[in-house]
Image (cartoon, rainbow, N blue to C red; front, side):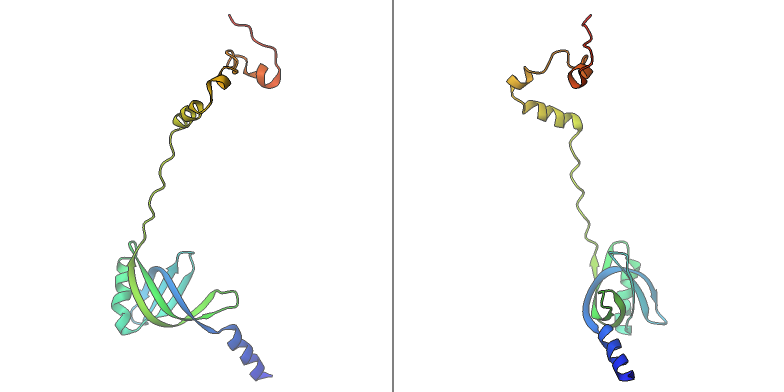
Length: 148
């Protein structure tokens, strides 16, 4: 029974090639570990080699404007969630991609003027001249107010 159980564990925790990109949030130089926060907020802890230390410290120092791209192998649960990074094959520091600001919407009065200009004159002629004073009359049938 034990071999079958370990076979199931291997099947559930298989190692898969991964490519991740995130912000280095912490580094333990003595323990050679670092924490990477992915865009979705997930934190992943990984080990690094002495050759990778300079890249990790650069990414940590510049964490507000740089992201670390990591290629490696990870233990992945059936759900697709990364349980643990088993190995780091390559690291690269990249600039943060700054999203272009959305164009600001035009002011409401400009949109209304454009809408008004798109309505033909014959349709404007159908609008009652006392519509603002007798709005409730035209919308709900209330008695009309007489002009003074």
